[in-house]
Image (cartoon, rainbow, N blue to C red; front, top):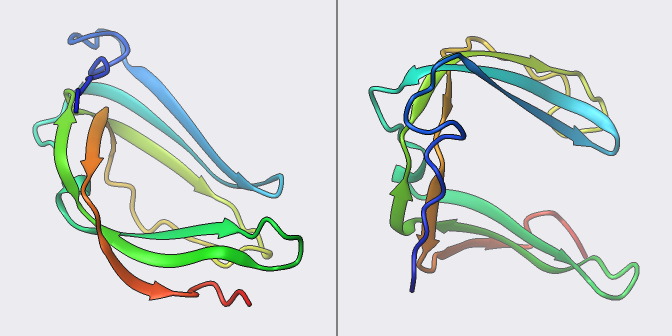
Length: 138
């Protein structure tokens, strides 16, 4: 398999002026969260996000209307190989909004410790089925 690495940072190895990254999350046209990360310098650490097995919920609706889900699994998987660019660090701000129709209504952030950016590429090599029918679909 051939690997390709994207640029480590949109402006190269030298950040120069702080760079603002903005992220928004929404569901059903309602804003759930917004965040701004102001990158300032290379990070002294590479982080840990892809260093541990992660759980994912895989689901696929049935092709037949009203038939629930054709696939409904909770799985755990880890990366088989990894390539990453330079990690960048800076200050972060996050706003979480109360959305009573979502399962995590009225979330709070206790403390924002910082913001980080790193482009990564991961190859997955299988996983473990943890549970099926996790969403309660018929």
